[in-house]
Length: 360
Ligand SMILES: [Mg+2]
Image 1 (cartoon, protein in one colour):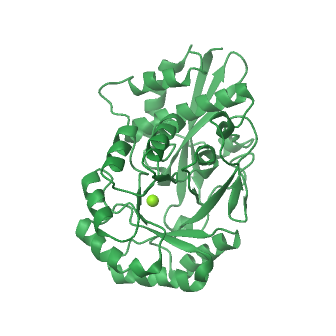
Image 2: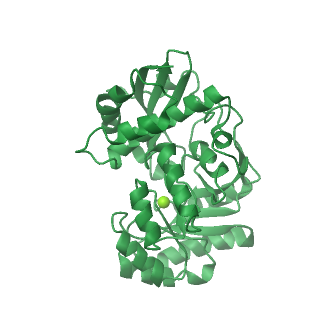
Image 3: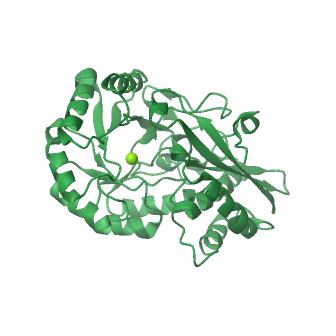
């Protein structure tokens, strides 16, 4: 079997309210990998808020696609190595890693389809039903928006909800978390997300104000580049730290693990160099009894968590319009059943490319 074509495009997809208050749209960089056997694989990367999507597509088309054309798609590890090493002057982080991720996801989709298995089973399944946490609570939400969103996820059975703590005054963040806690009561546990906005001292002060709220985790306290600072926060605060959505390779995650910078790691399959590298990261984490809760794109990440004994929750941001994918897994009783379709099981809906494709 040979890869005969890789066709890419960028889809610009509007978000619903209240998410649209913060991010009016997201973009998907899509790569369809076709083979001479008639089987094709769908890969895509989610550019959150749209950032970098066009650059990702150009890197994918000009530097990585030529590595794949004419090759056997079932040699996923070999092709991953070739893509990772394709440009020794371009580290596979940021834009380049999103591009590699989309293609790696597409290659695994082909592998699953040829094997006739959903990916979590191909990788050795541990479960087919994954608990989810509702995620959002952005800074631009009013308290009513915030509580409304949290209640909607709780109404879908989610027993966890994550919100942002972006206000410059840590006491204001405490008030917003308390408002959600009051509304949801004991049935839902909460997480908070700093999104890299504070320094070490700022985090120590903020976390001290939240310690009594039994939070599951305290996320991305400092710039993702500064692993030493993350380790310092982790050591000094009394809430478990989660991080990793902006870390890109097993090497970065190894450092996070060795420095004990987090109790929960959150690689993003669309950033951290695809399913292949995310699995390596997760298995490395297992050797240190660290749990893995992948970042966003739950419809793709379900397979990772379903294949790992140290998998925890998937992040559920309910933003996709019904005409984007053929079949988005539904959330029932706070869980997702992993699709039994071969590969990752996701396909774009008929007409989605025509409707959402960005015009240059
Ligand atoms: Mg986050």
